[in-house]
Length: 215
Image 1 (spheres, rainbow, N blue to C red):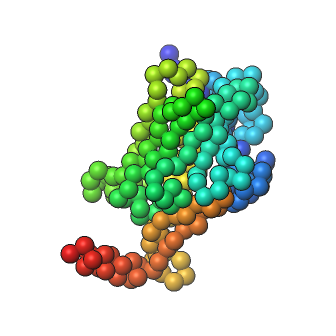
Image 2: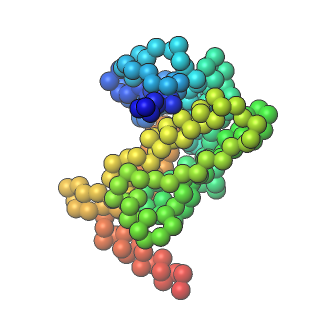
């Protein structure tokens, strides 16, 4: 028997409901996804809701300087909040992915529900795979008392985080009119993602300075 999809993740894009998705804190810019049970066919942003299991969406004002998601049940009630953790939660991506894990806490009014962690590469081979392809490694830890629907919504939230922050073209390096550039990291600010990049020669000089400092 042909395997059937367990769920369908619907993410409205820029052509229909989200003309400036990921570009600011306005309602029309807030990224979101809806999770449906099984296979649901149609146009993203206009799928039928009979099989809706839940959804996740950026909070009002896009969470400020903290990458965040609000997770809803099928009745549109908030069941969890996903927030970036760490000393500098607004910084992520770029070459920082090579040396740092990026964590996201999952919590509700009742307490901790779990965590999502974007893992750094373990070795040179996995680092090259991550730099040159769309492959990423995540771990999802959830409390045992969550329902099947809640767990499915957390998986959907993980996939949305990946699409929002870690599936960006030329996120670590790329080419422009000035030559090859290196993106050290991204800064999150009210829904906008601001890359901090430098030309290849400047990046090598920075690495040399860091190496001397470590010595």
